[in-house]
Length: 386
Ligand code: LLP
Image (cartoon, helix red, strand yellow):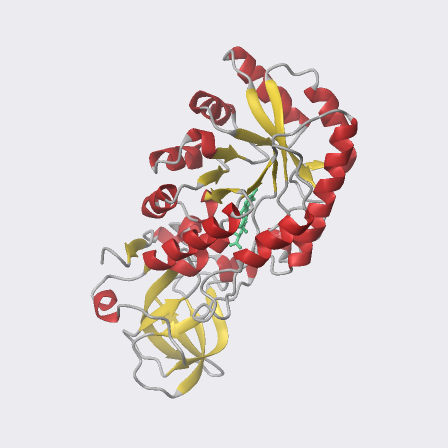
């Protein structure tokens, strides 16, 4: 089995489970995103929700990216990492008052607003602070992203964004709210999207919406297409960097930006997923009557994606010298039947103490870890400071 390139001797001495981040790959990915986006003059806000590790955020800040945040906590993390407030956008269907106050105090670039109710509250709070809040309307474009139902966001029945049929009402409201300034429109149709035609459909819808807004003499400073570009979970060794060129080129071929208008993007997964690996040790190999279980010291508290979305992550036994492949179910120690990383997969013959790599776990891995069952949060190590 082909395995990733890991500094095994160093990893072997560390207590498991932990996240291992390949900083060189992150920098290479960031350079690719920068090259491909800046060729078109696009602005990129990294989606902090994918990974909020302070070291990761500071590397992303140093590379000059902005941040897409979904809470006051994420705004604080982005600022602490050195991302300037004027490069921060803030989305979310439920912004608490203190979070709105924080965004206004810090002077973030934009609030991506998702309902009339929210516009009224932001207007009131900004008014009481003597400020004008820059907002972008998050519009639900009613486009199917052809991805897992739990990470689809742009369909009519999803809770996100303002439905197309309600857009005119929201625009009417914005004409009466003096402490809110409409600076853009925002979309996000879902995550782990591998079908570029979904993004093309989004751009065409955005163009149509822009035409309608123009007929109301509304001029926008920016159009934000959100995140969602998928990665190759099956081949992290062969495709470590997502195809940003095809993505940005496809958008650029269709988008009708108005003079002076900027396009913004919010990639999360495609920036950090392949850079992170969950490293775990085998506690036991348990022979069942019909199956053999590899029981790891990592569980769904460390990486919940397989349990929550039936997500596939490539698993490699890093230390087994024995090349014979066996079929295993790879599970964690958490007291839940859902604590399964993979079923019926082939690994080199596996024994207690072997180091196991769960690949492509940099996005929504450490960020979604919990302490359920009284477990410790996973540690993080970086390739350049091992
Ligand atoms: N912008 C907005 C408004 C979002 O809601 C999201 C992700 C992104 C950008 C970044 O999307 P990305 O480029 O990472 O696809 N926990 C799930 C994914 C949830 C995504 C939530 N929103 C998973 O592990 O697959």
